[in-house]
Length: 213
Image (tube, rainbow, N blue to C red):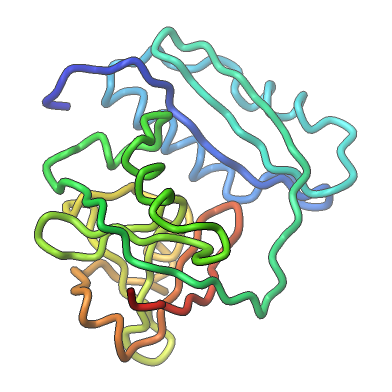
């Protein structure tokens, strides 16, 4: 990384299902280890064992939050999680807050979330389920908690490149690897006449309705 390391921790937010275990576990752990190496954090120890201990005896879906600090210390917290119905549509709006494509820390999931919190605070919960952010070039980047996917032909999706200034989301990575999504820049005006989706590893892919300000 080309900037000083600030006081933050790495985060992975996983979904646990009693019958199938952790969703996309391999991708989450790979991202955590890759991020730790890039930032010079100590390697986490026995992460899988701590995760399994945290969900022992669970008989309902859980939201599992794993954090790693620079000394290699991990913490695991769990909370009940209710999956979204398949026909869910989230209302999304565009934030005035902008991301910087030059900020490489945006590519890593951390507790450094001030810019996302500022964007989310622009709208009340009853005005938007999610808020999308652009960069300084007016390119669509991501939501405050989701990756962005635009319909790009039959059965195909397009998602912005990391170089636009956004997180390498786990769901995003999976869809790219499965060739269900390709990487390509997205202009704001393209959102007017194409089907929009947002999503993350916890909630999956969600249909979105953009509400123009």
